[in-house]
Image (cartoon, rainbow, N blue to C red; front, side, top):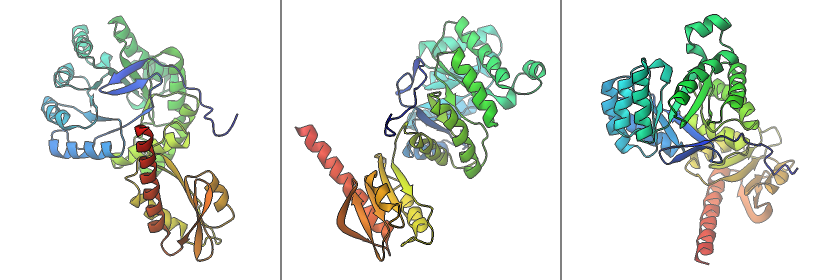
Length: 371
């Protein structure tokens, strides 16, 4: 097998539709985040959703804890550029209200909303309006009897909890749902998802819950989700960081990009730098990431500070720089160009070349379409 091929064989799941986004089956793995504004603050929540959408998120989840928040959700939904998932606990009336207001998905555990008639009313509203449901189990909020049975959260406990909710939907003949079994411990979450993947056909929503701050949470999520995704498990994901939700989206795409599952924006290949570097690689990378964060087209750019690895990395890049004394080499599609890059302002010059490349690619596509 060539290393250019992706060796991951994806688990075959059924497919559901959240707004205009397909989840499961052969659809791209969807990236989502969650707002952390007060939902009753419509202006702030809409602004955050727009920022999350601009970062590339396919979906965004909004907590709706009260009927006042449900009324605000109506206004938020009207202004959202991407599908919205309403996060609801216990109160079935809120679920019915946001269903009336056009929610694209309900994150609600059927077993937690009371009597059978209440569960049935929510499921029927979802069925009538083609709204899927996400069952979300969390290692920190397992049912008391499961805590007593297993002594502590275990993969088996999480899956048993999830299957209780799945069984309710099965009994009501509702199959448009996805499931998550999140935990803050990597091995607990991974073990639970592996078990669940063998028991149901519905899409799985991945996440390491309450993963931590921006750096530690990104690392923990990359390890846990990377293990599952490399095994073909997962149809949508959320990176749970104590950070700006936009960072969750960026980390999500970085994880998918590193596994060659889904590409968005620039894949930078950059050396960690050493005494051989002919320009400041770290400073250059910081500038480039800021200058080019608006680029959504998938491409690879290598930024290597010396000639030891620079030419080799450039061979597998769309654009590349290989450090040299005063003026560094510039590569396009693996070919060395006459253009030389001044080491005093590499970021500015490389940004210009990236944008020229994108314009040329756009022009070629337009010519092809005319043909």
